[in-house]
Length: 280
Image (tube, rainbow, N blue to C red; front, side):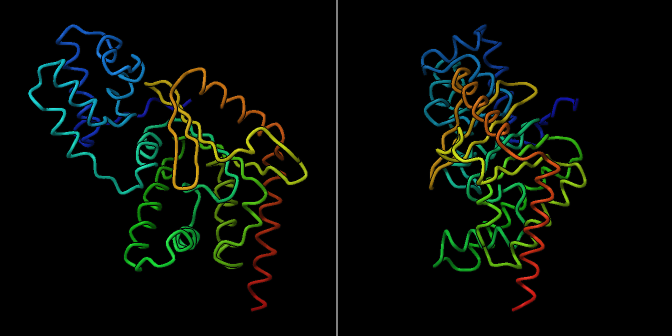
């Protein structure tokens, strides 16, 4: 079992802000629940802010300054930290992902960002923004590949992905791009760095037909669920809601191919793409 992932406050402004919130709250003699009550935030949410899992919002920062008498400290620093290399709907989820010890994801249409190759990511962003100049696409690709560096650690986070068969069959970027993308996933599987299963078309209907789902667990905070939509996303922390989505994921896993059978299918489809690319 991997140990807790420490987020050094000296190297992360978000962690520094969270550490300062904990210090000021404890000095004021307030519990997490009492601090969160005026903003209708749970004690566990305050704990996620303090541990750096959640991003502090401006209205929260202003209220914390008012409650803790910190003379605009949190408001100023929250404004400074607001900029992100990720889209607004995904920024907080990406920050949480970087702190997770365990990530489980169901991908219905595209290879998840953590598993994408540069060529695949570039093809995806070019489809999203067909008129964007190349420098914009370069920045987006760079941010995505930087996220994938989470897998450079040999054990943490534990990443378990269920790919819908549509992900394998959708020709993003053409056959050569797809062959490389699937070979990359197969290599990570053979290195035992990730767990990947394929949900075949023959499985028919399933519990996650509504869209993409990501579940994240942490060493020092309650779990989160992230629901992915078209240019939108929802990060959820209500324990009952998260538990419900954990069951959804388990049901999808139960309908998916085994990891060994999934690897065989992924490599077979990759080989088909390679043969196709050689013909042209």
